[in-house]
Length: 214
Image (tube, rainbow, N blue to C red; front, side, top):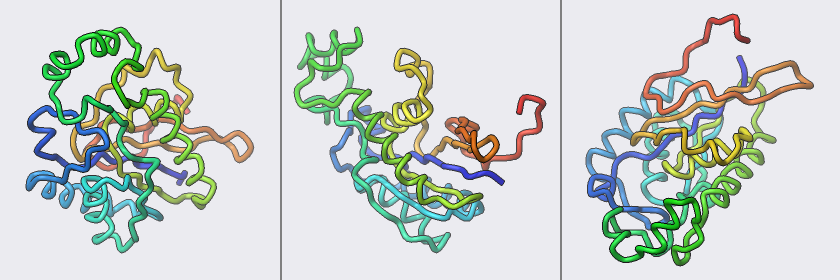
């Protein structure tokens, strides 16, 4: 069995339902989100995680704690796995953002993410997440599973950055649903190990892949 990293998005919040940008605003899970976390945690516990690390924002911490309770593994908050900082857009819907920051949002759509006050770029968020993953992997023993509980945007950008996918291709990856996860699996001989994306936006446990494409 290879080492695995399960990157798990938090459960639902009231702002998710309303379509409001959360970013680093500390919004809690709603009732459905708590139920999602408990249900998903029971499935993920079967993987016997060696370590559970999470964003320090409440919605991610509470999701992680659901897994910690059923697996008996302590939860470790880490600011590097916070959601991307959307700056002045936080708390607004997409339509409201265009009303308040028309020039900044038009630039955002064109790919210039520097025009929204106090916002982080996808590249900055991805690098912060990826560097956190790389550091944790130094301490992950062979055949063990690391679970990282985080947020939709930073998971997408962070996984892509970690795998070395060119930034112009990041948008080809869809968003993760609440309490769904993605899986990174290590492959190759000892001196030539590499990481492969083996699950994306999943809600079922990873299964062995039987294929000639090793």
